[in-house]
Length: 163
Image (cartoon, rainbow, N blue to C red; front, side):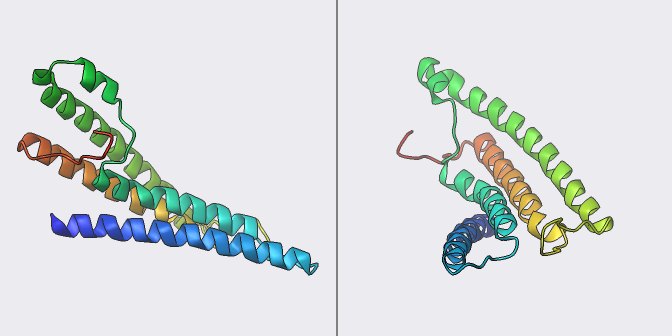
């Protein structure tokens, strides 16, 4: 499953690039305003970059074990219940993530099929800035399937400094 880990790391790198793009857009807009100009649709591009960075960061966070969990439950329950808890929680999350992945794929596909374009000053086909959503969600689903497989095979799960 090294290829899946590499893809999750690539998604994390792309998420970081989109965050840098936000900084560039905002800085450019500040400079343009100081000279009396504007960058057309800069708010739109910054919002799209933020959405892409959030969704593309999901598989990388899963790889690193950085998703928020209710570890208080694990601390309170006896050790013998930890594996069943992990199996149930991961299965539930996998099903939910698979459903969300299906919905965002349909959403972006419909944007493509109906030739939906942005309403701002720059007419961008909406499926382009929306592409980060299905990629990130489908990769998260794959990472959750990997986690469930590791859980079933009694392999070590992702750990962070938080436990």
